[in-house]
Image 1 (cartoon, rainbow, N blue to C red):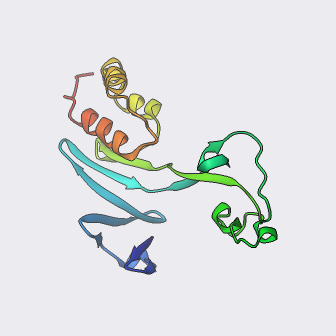
Image 2 (tube, one colour):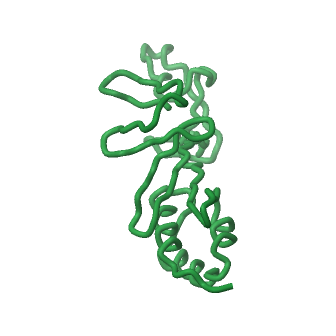
Length: 169
């Protein structure tokens, strides 16, 4: 687990020797290969295995706009300027790259269903866990414009699902 404390980048190691990590008002517990955040919702508890991915969204264009077209970076040092750093957010990128990246959530969520942790990442997986409420969940997702790549939206739909009454088989 990496986190920032002031200006220092901190890393939690030997998670097996840790019971709980508190970062502000957030709680993390050891699980599998790392730490899961424990999120208390109105209708239950969700465990979040955080993963952020860098996704290329295009190239830096004129006036800071992002474009899908081909863009080439000029060697600013030829003009007495040092502007290439703003276009190279990652050291492994080649010098002069104009690629623009955004961080996207690729989290995995776990809920307790019949005393087992159930792994959820997609709406299809949520519907499989709550098959009796497929139509209701789909309507809720559509009505609330839920994006399963947005952590807040996933927690909203999971809170809704955890609050559904248990139907007899």
